[in-house]
Image (cartoon, rainbow, N blue to C red):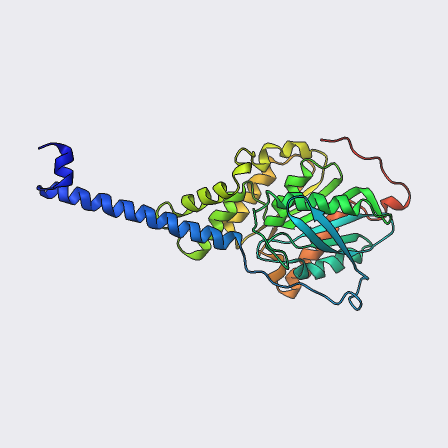
Length: 320
């Protein structure tokens, strides 16, 4: 009897056992693919929360600024004015967060006469779509800078960026090719967007199943196929030589902290490192939040002074 016939009509116990094992493996792999696909969809479509404020009564006299993102529709941000001609700090929220959760940090920076701008990424706040964990979000950052440089009350050559995880990746990705970015504060930055997919899967509790994380990452990469050849951020971070960077890592988030530490070690000077006790600025208790805000404000005051533009506006840096 041939092997094919034996597989079709098993007569020996070990052949029957082999068929059972193969069937189990097949259905296990199929279930993994299906579950990981559903998980990936949930991860890239986070639950959105509203982040509206009463612009007429909110302290800081914010303006609403609308801008278009090529291929992604329109966005609406809040511009909080500081000194006329001062640099602008753009705050970039994290995954599953929104601009409304950054208002205390906005106030801390505006109190030191910075212009401050916040907006919601795709799939966050009132915006539809899916998150790409930084691939297309960097385009949103560039579109925001492009609209702000048209104002006559900001320094068009000096921008600072602060971001948390998703926002940090988008900030660094844009900064590596935008000479208008003069300082960066990066909290929980990662090197590849698929690293955030891994973290997302592990948070669901099924990350320990064989191939689940890898399968979800493959689904994510298929959804973002146009970026399949994009290098990690660390491959171009040497272009940031001369641009001050502050890397922030949290002790209670060891996986993300490890990635951020690796990015810090690969970054050129001038660079700084801050290690804090707890992750996610928006959820910190009041005393820790104030310490965090003071650390970020101190960094920008030293590296991107708000008053420099009052005496002279520096020439634009050559393109990197």
